[in-house]
Length: 150
Image (tube, rainbow, N blue to C red):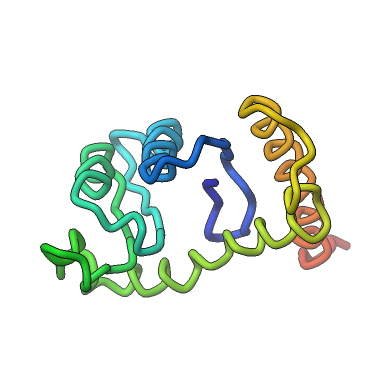
């Protein structure tokens, strides 16, 4: 799942088979959809994305990987001081937790706690529909925060 850090809206979602690499592979595909060669964007992620392959793929797409460092991994972290020294890295690490709100809503209010469909395509459709509903409820909350014009 790809979310916007500023408003907490889901930008892209895709279900995949769990094989140990699927999350990173899907994340690369989703990032390639939004990455632009002339505009640098950032992506915040947890320690599971701290691999040399994912970090290299992000940098190739002009995406700065604000990935949590996995210092206990053999060979150390793929994220070095040129990324972690910036204030934006700290902000991204704080904001990346917003993605958990989307999953939490989908599991408590939406139907993704125990999926009642079979097949990756149907699960993907259900996940997409659930996150679209989440975005609608999030937009309602954001509109309530916006000051009304006189």
